Length: 193
Image 1 (cartoon, rainbow, N blue to C red):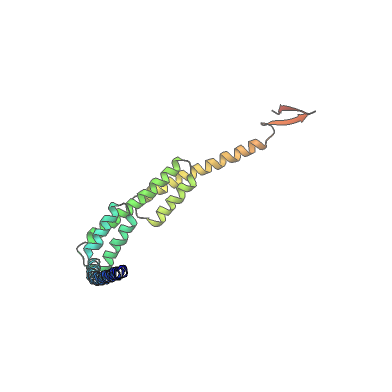
Image 2: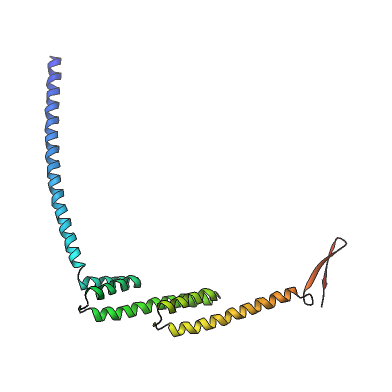
């Protein structure tokens, strides 16, 4: 009797497992169908996005968004793409104006960094930034100001060099320097003036 109940129990477990296996297979088939439907939706959305990306409005909006995030170079990239791909767009006038504004903002940022370096008496660094500004943005509102600051920096650099030369010659001249000498094991200071 015990043997029969164990066999009956094993049969019930086997039938239960077969039923679970069938349910799992059915669920897998349903999941695969849903996955295929979702993939079709994703592909459809990608096609819509790609179509939207081929409009002048998309390029202009991306440029405005980049500008709002203070990424002026990226904004100009979208604006130039708009001008190149859609030369008859209603946004061309706005795009050209925004390129000028972005470019001026970039130049202003470089100019302000150069002024900060100048205030810290890092005149060479300031000049490098200003020369970059003049090379990259020669028509910006900051071109003339940059030339004036470069001249000021150059004057400061020359004054620093003259002061360094004078200080170096003062150290070498025995007439104005105190010289340390050692006599008989004691340290004595003698001024030669």
